[in-house]
Amino acid sequence: MFRVEHLYLSPGHNYFGHQGLPAGEHSVIAVPEIECVAGHGIRGDRFFDFKPDYKGQITFFSGEIYDELRARFDLWDREPSAFRRNVITRGIDLNTLIGREFILQGVAFLGATECSPCHWMNAAFAPGTEAALKNRGGLRAKILTDGWLRATRPGVLAHG
Image (cartoon, rainbow, N blue to C red; front, side, top):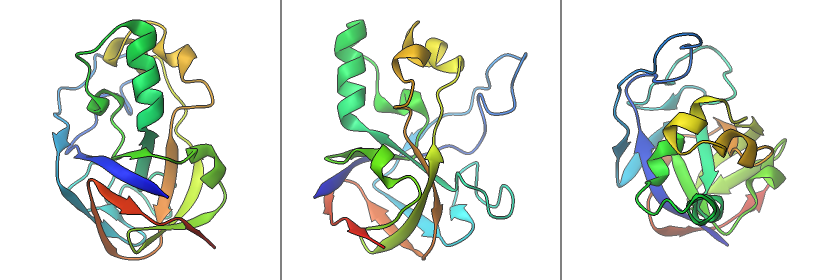
């Protein structure tokens, strides 16, 4: 069993599409729940209706990896929102969901690909974060059914 620990939305891009430019200044908003819209993304998020069949309609990041990085870099004041992923989970190896359908809190997803870390992670969290997240940057997924995710509720993993 795994759970949703934190949920985040961001109305704009800070890093995506900013190659060679300064980072944007859009806030990351912690929310108690998010509305997942099949084929479109998360209502209110920067990737909602980004483009047809987009593989990153929703993003997931491991709370265990977040804890490991805080300890590794001795940075206890950093929030998991620094990674700009929508859903922080506990109790699941997100890489095992790549290429698989899964259900979390009644919403169906298709794990599409890893959220590959980029050089911006070194500024957003700490120098060395990009390298530390190699093959552990989180999960990009497509939303297959409409529904709501809520923070701190246990999830039931059902593979399709």
